[in-house]
Length: 137
Image (cartoon, one colour):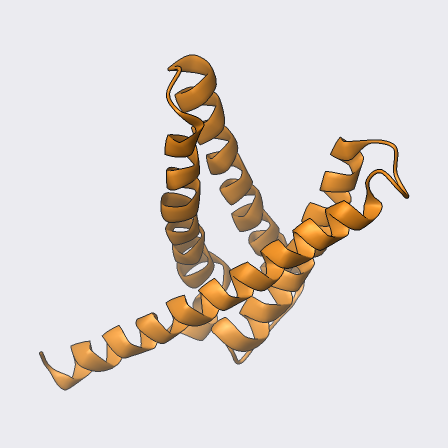
């Protein structure tokens, strides 16, 4: 393996590891916020989930912008692109649940398997090549 490709592999591996750590932190934020809000502060589980998801996206953006893909340029456009990336992940997960479980009658565990394998890789690629593009070149 050439020095260039070895360096690229190490950089991407490091980014993936940091991305995973931030993903776990964002997930813990989502769950903790949801459990704190519902049923105590909000009477709707769906409303609590929207608030919790939004806070988790904020945590995820900060972690990705500052640690996974450093040298942040920030700006409104980057935040909008990050929200598009996050909503794409939500859409993928919703599609897996709907199509595989509701339409095809497959096990919910199959949809979960895709949610924890395909979606994170897709969102990582979006973040690396769409959201934080000026930082990855």
